[in-house]
Amino acid sequence: MFAIMTDQEALLLTFLPKNSIDFAISLITKNNVFFKITPERFSKKGDYSPPQRGKGHIITVNGNLSEYDFLLTFLHEFAHLFVWEKYKNTVAAHGKEWKSEFQSILLDAISLKLFPEKLEREIFYQYLRKEGFSAQPNTALLTVLRELNTNDKTILVDDLPLNTKFWIKNGMCFIKGEKLRKRYKCKECASGKSYTVHGFAEILKYEL
Image (cartoon, rainbow, N blue to C red; front, top):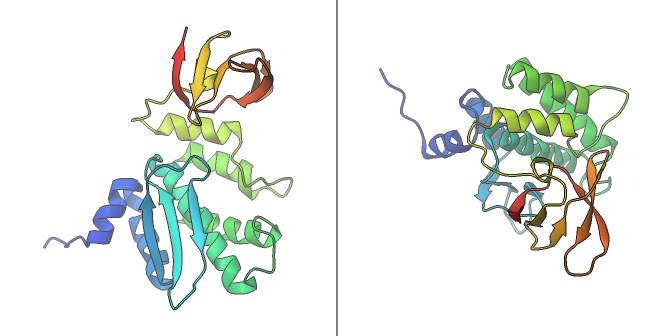
């Protein structure tokens, strides 16, 4: 006997790892969430909006993300939901309360084996250690996410040779210069001013 897949399950299967669908559906259903997949937004990967005007929680995630990046963003936004339910808007957006909720939901996902081992290791290092925590993923985590995305055809600043002229997604043009840890010292084409550009910034186009 074959199980009939709901429209929501079919939609999520397009964006999430297959083994995470039940977990995702459970979170959406139990928390009365209106979940929406959006076009790419340069300023953010996802968003959470609390209930208002008789409507429930709203969570959005960019549809251009790879499946594991999508899953991490999905869980990131649910951590905001859990914080709002406990504290409303009385605490910092990514303060200790959010960190605690995000760690808790990540541990749930890890217990269900939703991440490949090498990604799980980076998640632990980035988010679950006592020594430090940043809401922004580090380079090692971003690298693993990129490796796992077999359909990734994006070009990053890291991929370009020095002195390459390139444009990033906000339309700004730069010439790639020396590396300064995670960023590159680049010259803006129009003004000649120096800026630092992250190595994982996506390239719109470039000229060698």
